[in-house]
Length: 238
Image (cartoon, rainbow, N blue to C red; front, side, top):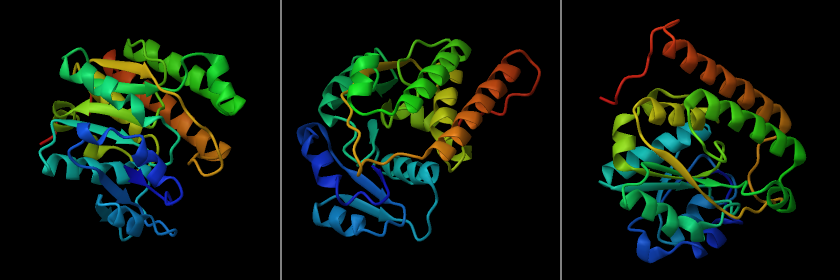
């Protein structure tokens, strides 16, 4: 759980988790000011606190380092803001255990009406659809939502993709999926009910626009490397 000011929503997120399926819950607090770390410790979570704010990508890096140190075989990343319905985790993990997928994403967009009815802003829906279409075309995938905050991976993905070299900002997620595809990992998704409300984390329009441009730049770099216009920089983790 990459966390930033999630004290109001953490317990609700945990309540949806099937704890019989989970060996350990790791929460990384990226310098919250609302007591997120203290609450996480009181709830018995393995809690790591950053001394300085590292950003969304930097937070995930700490999460994955800890997961690897714990010798996990499957790692699920979920935002602790209660936006994603964690009850779908057993289905996501099942796809991984059956060997059908190596990466499973929780898709917020089973249909346009459901996404908008859940409170997704229209501009965010349009941007998501446009970017996801481009990403599917460039990467040769058929995923419903490339920009979800609910993701499950086999440990082989974390051990292979060079995610330590990725951005510490939001585009980390896009770079990680490009790396997974580059190394031949199979990506799939499952529909996940989603909630939009004031306490749920969400980046504003300006940061979303920056994220969108960086996503397009990442796709451009992937295409350029694929057709030989630039040297691929992707290498497996050391």
